[in-house]
Length: 380
Ligand SMILES: Cc1ncc(COP(=O)(O)O)c(C=O)c1O
Image 1 (tube, helix red, strand yellow):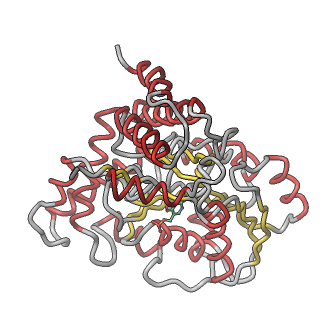
Image 2 (tube, protein in one colour; image 1 turned 180 degrees about the vertical axis):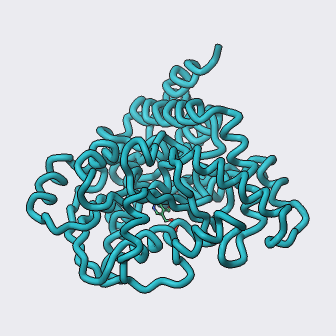
């Protein structure tokens, strides 16, 4: 078998249209020709983020935009509330600590979403909180947090900073309508691009706060970037080829229709959950599952990492592992970006075969059939 199936929550597969756009002959970035490409990408990003404000492009992975949010919005010692429900919640905490903020943590059991009442309680207990940080979709636990509801609590209060790395382009997270103050994502997930670009949108009041924010910053100076991206292609050399690809991927999403894109992700995730349940496997996040990926516990006594190695090395199907305390216990099946019904079928069929190989008694096709029932809904 030579065909590879990349079904991980990032990097994700690249459509041909995007790969071709990225192989355009290199052009100079300080030219009207590149400014046009850049401007079209900027406008597409605004639609995707649901904002009238700028969505800035940064040459980094998603974490760069998380760091930029912190370093541009805060001053040393300021208190922030960090919702920590997994590896990426932990990352907010690590960035806040690295920059000398004073984080208060809401620690959540992995696989669970934060409760609104808990956020409300902590905001009451800490009225001097200047920012609240969260993941819209916590990829490590395949959990969705209630961002829309929390945005109602922070309105007029602390800035609400959302990591949308596996949410933007997967489900609707409209920045202006919901009142999010900073939303970040990266290129290698729903945007169907290689790693290397990060994106950040700020609200009006967040831009206002940048003026007094005293943390040091240089490469990720968002005011400098905004000025330069409004009139050209940024303060430094942009990732030219990735931005050619971005323009193509945004155009693919627009052609499909954003509502259809979100419906496709929701359907793929429902089908994957139905398949796992039909196979008797326990879901990692049964109550608030993310539409980007599905975490599944493998039966006791089965080393999930060995199953993943087998899937990758013998069957050319790459799924993702569990992290930290979930290592060896769970697998994560992604359905994000350039993926469709038959990627779900591939993942489920391959999992059935790998489980059989590891001695789990499951009838072939039971998970596939459960997924098919749901995937059929999209067919006329
Ligand atoms: C929710 C979330 N936040 C942040 C990141 C970090 O992004 P990057 O690895 O692009 O820096 C990831 C990457 O998987 C993610 O899933």
